[in-house]
Image (cartoon, rainbow, N blue to C red; front, side, top):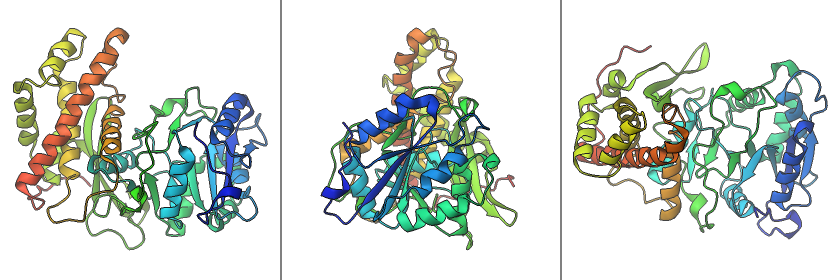
Length: 413
């Protein structure tokens, strides 16, 4: 069970206040989260107008102001989450390592750029990822210092319920207060099954990008520096010397998003198919394709077996190319330069599982749609192995050519 150490027994100076945002239509879900927490002080905060307009913001206002007396930090969970095993230990260690931070415990697998930030961290074995300001802050599980939670609650109270999307306005609050948001890698929270009471069922797959359900706490793991200083570190009022980018998969197609702020919008993410855009990030399309050809000739099961079994199951060659491209470009970007900082503190086994989940959650982006249900588990496994091989190939390529590879211009504005 994911037990949260009661505050009365804590000896680390952290006093957690915990609430669960709840809609009455999911009574069993809220009770399940409370039971999993194992914290008798955790409370349920219900939607005050469940029959009114659908508005997570309405409940979020109450949740963020419901801070227990004497708390140093406030955690808000939603009532349709699943917690990792030993959740309380991982959470307290993470908060203790970054007591002043806004910490997201979940990042959605198909969020435009935040999902790439955590996949990038997973590929390098880093325990933290900096999220992108201007993209919604994932609020499925979010913890912050109590003083900041009070300020957030006051800010949300100024907004009409009809604005609806609490995650967008938490992002706005953090940008207005110049507060970076970081995510744990692995994620500590997973999205539960069931329909969205907020009407978000059409927003794509609701699944964590890098959730790992069970792993042993590792001393010092969360003390490692935040991943993303060059690619995903927040671009705030001072701007960014070099626009970052994100590798994204939509409808089984790999695209590259170029991330930058402008005077009239906090986040612009123009994107292009990877074949057109990869030169701008220092990788030639032919290099990606030659890597795939070599892998298919190598006899590795994730190559030859996937091509054969995929064809038998109705999966053509193009999805293999797209998964390989996504993994290769991720690996080429997530390769620490020689002579860099010391290795991450994430245990090797945990890092491997987070990296696998990062690729596995890409498999949900339309790759399996043409595959009959009876074959999906097998094809998913082979696709994940292909993606992992691509990450390794991309990292090997980057090490061989160095980090100063010339970038080609791209006509994306």
